[in-house]
Amino acid sequence: MANTAQARLAANVAAAFAAILFGASVVAVRIAVRDVPPLTLAFLRFAQGSLVLLVALAVFKRDLLRVHRRDNHGSSLRRFARPVGVPRLGDLPFLALLGALLFTIFPYTFNAGLRYNAASRAALIVATMPLMTVVISRFASRERLTAQQVGGVLTSIAGVAVVLADHGGASVGSVKGDLLLLTTALCGAIYNVLVKSVLTRYAGITVTFYAMLFGSLFLAPASFAESGLHIAGSSAQTLAMVVFLGVFGGALGFSLWTTALKQLSPTQVAVYINLNPIAATLLAATVLHEQLSGYFALGFVAVVAGVMIVNHRPANRFSERDLSAPAPSDAGARP
Image (cartoon, rainbow, N blue to C red):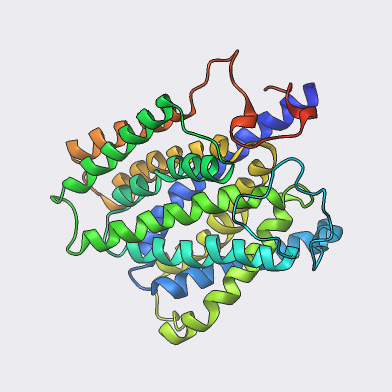
């Protein structure tokens, strides 16, 4: 039990650090997207990230590069049942699906959305991901939301509505940016739920590498068509942001995030995304000199409060089976 507690503590630390890196990535994308088109920036970020992970695995843990082409492991989903409506796929096709969600659609909508919205506003909208994760997790496992969870969802939605009602600091076309960023949060939530099924037999870094590799391959044709990857004329600051996004906001951040999902439930990990807007807001105010309005502060508090309401459980009633249905052997383990 002690080892399990230590593993869960490490997973919580990994999720928190990943969320901080993602918050810093919001500001980095906001800077880089001024010179680099959204698809090209996404491709450069995750192509770098997958290369870094490939080198790390090849040098230190080559056996983790091995995956099964077909799903021949009928008992592999004992810890986390396949979500309702998700067909049985081979491992590589399933990893490709995960890559399309998190490393193709997610970065495009995120980068494109940051062309219309301030970094702090974008981070707040993406912070709705935990709520979406709760809803999708419940739907996939055919479980109902409690009255407390419904209240939390409504509270957070109200917070987003308050932020969206504030047009004072938003650029023209912010509604388009808001929709793009909500799509980003939805893709992240779906990934959080689906990835549990392959984490029963692969390490988090393995899943991250293959998903990131497939996502990069999906992005490559569109990115070449978008700009031909001509970024030689970009400023030194832009190039530094691109490298940061690939190494820290890509390889490291997503490896930590997926590794945390191996140990914790989707919602337990997703709740850490609320550190994203905190980090992004502090960096945006410092680096980009963005001004935050009272509407933003009120909306941020409501979103965070809603997420905490959704995830709060009395210690003597908490059951991880509510969210991730772990094996019976894990049922008594607690941090």
